[in-house]
Image (cartoon, rainbow, N blue to C red; front, side):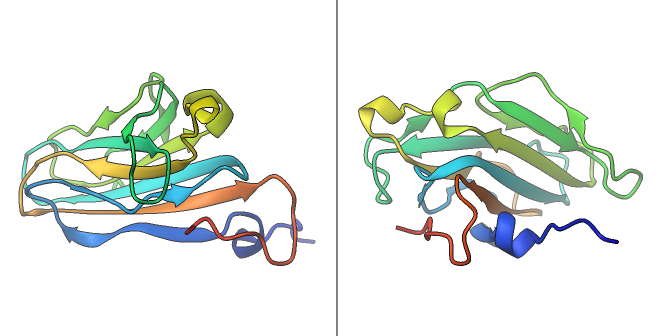
Length: 160
């Protein structure tokens, strides 16, 4: 019998960054993670040019990005060559991550525990992902998967 787990019900995916060329870098929209136990930001980089890509989760006080600043160190995993492996490697905890320059398809996962790496006391309850300047041949995208505190048929939206 299969485990009683449903990705859409337990970790509903929400797009942060649509796939796009990333020469100048960009910042996603800010999503409200105040009611989440954890959020997983999953970044995908299709690296067509040997220029590294920096990925930085940002926190803010609202969905407009008020007071935006970096989070504190959090857990990070990466797979820097998806064609040869599907294994994620644990990285040193940090507030951001920079890929290597290898021409591969890559995945980077940030595990966000809002109570541990965000300034909730001062009202920082929204999160975004920012990519650094790179090269137009590098395509980036990101999704966020939110683990709500209480399982329910219709979890609250993180868009507002």
